[in-house]
Amino acid sequence: MPHTIAVDAMGGDNAPGAAVSGAVKAAAEMNIKILLVGQQDVIETELAKLPSSTAVSILHAPDVIGTDEVPTTAIRRKRQSSIMLGLKAVKEGEASAFVSAGSTGALLTGATVVIGRKPGVERPALGALLPNRKGFTFLVDCGANVDCKPTYLAQFAQMGSEYMSKARGVKAPRVGLVNIGAEREKGNALVKEAYGLLEEAAREFGLNFVGNVEARDIPAGVVDVAVCDAFVGNVILKYTEGLAMGLLGMVKDELMSSTLSKLGALMAKGAFGRLRKRLDSDEIGGAPFLGLNALVVKAHGSSNDTAVCSAVRQCVNYLEGV
Image 1 (cartoon, rainbow, N blue to C red):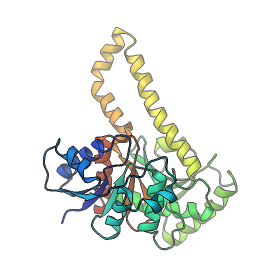
Image 2 (cartoon, rainbow, N blue to C red; image 1 turned 180 degrees about the horizontal axis):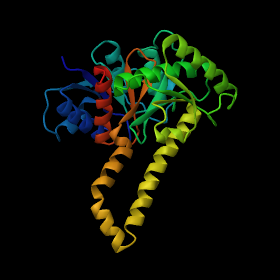
Image 3 (cartoon, rainbow, N blue to C red; image 1 turned 60 degrees about the vertical axis):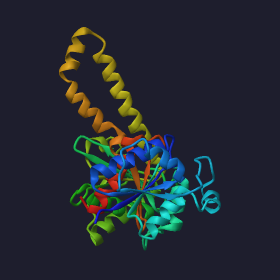
Image 4 (tube, rainbow, N blue to C red; image 1 turned 120 degrees about the horizontal axis):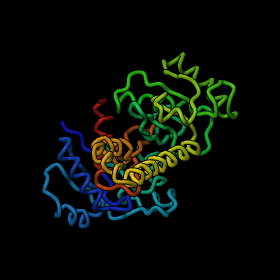
């Protein structure tokens, strides 16, 4: 039986168009069912612009939570919002996972309340796939927990390892603790204590902990999972996104600087196209919240239809253990 993925049709800067179009595209490409959650008349207007599909259904949600609203207040006052009803659909088994480009805070708070944490998990974490020379490194936490305890980092490591194994098919993912140096004695009190806990997890649970890693090791593909608090993780994430686009822009400027370089660019057009795709965050689609009783993926607020489709694909890969 095909999976049903719930998609927040009202979340994100480009909603509802991008969310609806991306979800319909995903249904056609992946042999799955889509549950679009949001204001029914608005969704129907968007669906009328697209090829009809029996794999797409609508769950009416009259309320919308804005990105400027206080998360705890919003989820309490707007229980009929697309975020809350989408999470409820997953909780009640109407869908296997939920994708939203809406408010990160409201989505995390709502998911924690509605879906709940897995036993033993102190804090859910947000993970992001960053491209490296060999594939991807999963950065966790990158947005949910700015202030962390050492036990949180140890749990992030185990959750990140499980995710890479299920969603990306990586056997025994290599886990590294982000630090300012590779030596065990480097870093602040948080990472020093977390290091010992990760060593214990390696002994007791078989976690493939390889020690400290520096930020430069991430694009080199030294580890499959990079563990840190959300302050460090978000800085790494945003810098990586900016650097990727900046480098692509600089390369383009240089290639267009002379007739000879333009000829070289024409010959290497295919290679540059593949590189751009590898660095394009739309091809990843979103970042999953880890540690919950069901899968919730946070798509970027500026997601287009390609990004929404990719976020749904990420859910399917995880659910099928690809």
